[in-house]
Image (cartoon, rainbow, N blue to C red):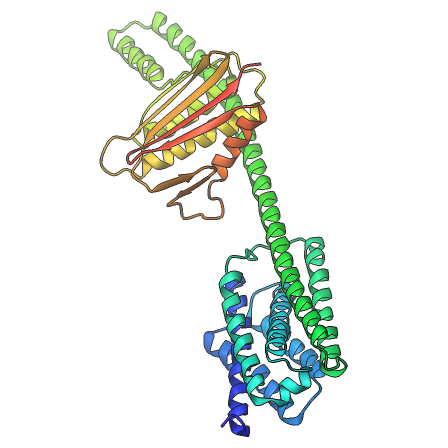
Length: 434
């Protein structure tokens, strides 16, 4: 049966289909589709049938490879929402892995069956079938590993080039080895072992490139997160600076109003007008929320957060003595307390039934400024060392507030500790006093 031409047409068709489906799967993992599923799978027949036609007419393998590379690249540009560099990167990774696996599979079949060269394997139907089955199983298995590679984020042009150059070199090296093995390698078992070793080294090289690519993506993602943190802190700082100015204006206005009311009261002649003025004075004093932490910006932060707590019916207690923390930069002060209270308020706001409570304490003890912030909660929170996972919808900004707080503490030689209970979130942090 395996000598039958129809059988080999079916085998080659299945093998090519597997290759193209793995390519599509790779793009699905790292990209977003911009065409309907029907269009994507319908157009997949173009590269598949191109390979079958080339095989039927015996087109040179290098020519076939080049044309299929171009067709696949155009297909991926059309079907997926990626920039050109990212499309080249994913396509390059696929062909590097696919060709490396083919070379490794060929080397194993060649050594274990004691054949002389690639021509013998291609002319032997049994060995050729072994090669196809082995290589395509390995290619499908590689998808499991590739899922762990984080390529969803965009890189800079320089980072793309630093990854694409070794990928291109590996692909070229594989093509050269294939050409030499297929045409020029003599019947020599030692050389077959050398080819096997080279194939293994190429696979290891591919793994190294994948690891380097993953590290570059992580580094780029961390850089973006840090920029977002810094941008958020700058916005917070400017906001509280403006809020402080507005609060000073309000305080001056309140003081002036009291003086005006006092003058009116002294000049008033009726008891009703005096009662009315007293009510106005009482209303003014009731709406004043004063904090005296020893830091003007922190007072403003507490004032703003207390207004939010009152609006959301959250019981709060802010008791912080910040008078000995002049060495802590204003921006870090904003980062620490704004993010702490924002997270606590957000958690309490999700409570429909039960107590909504936030308690924040901060004072100096044994040469350390110690902060403790507790808030009730009902939402899911998972904390593992440095990372925190919640039920927030915004996954991109996940944990950025905590990272910002941690960086501010570490900047001054401090540290933080987080304890997550079923109904409570507890934050503790300390900074050595300078």
